[in-house]
Length: 285
Image (cartoon, rainbow, N blue to C red; front, side):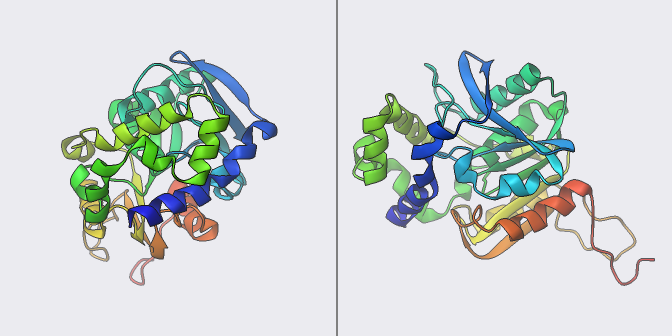
């Protein structure tokens, strides 16, 4: 499973090698780094956060699709893409604080957040650490506890090494081309080993959260259901009470890295959630 997962990540980030030649965004000073970001579309502000080893281009078609109805701020996180690295571990609290600092720098008091994988974890921490900055959160392919990962992935984490990753041609090419890329790999490996037990904090979240996962994702189905229940979901509808503000969407026949590639399905979950639309039941007027 682990080699398939890493190979899939390589395919996802394969477009990153050309990213530097496609700069169309801006840079802003954030916590000692120069953070690269791009703004597109019109409407209510929506911040998009990518996964590990990814950048804005490798988020694919979901960004322009969301920009049809939102003012999208797509960020590149610490050490990724065109954002510089600093002498600091990559942790989810650190990344969340970076997003809050970015919002200060560009004058965003509050925004909707869509994060995928590492970006989704960052979004959860942003909601926990800076709840006043988050209107609604879309968290795709996430976990609130290390026990939420699939057993195969959990077993693989202790085996992860920089040299092992560099056996993959893409990672070796990036390391040869980008100073500091080996250090980024080391930081992201360490990120997988960071303690993570956020149940109490997640239970206290007040903003609506859409949990998105593939049915063959890196987080287990049981864990995604448990996360939804922590957010007030899992109750019966059609009983005269409004549905919970938070939602759960499971994408069929979908692995971790396939979540972001199914743009129409993903957008079909995100857009109604951000608009506050719900399907009307047969007993509703």
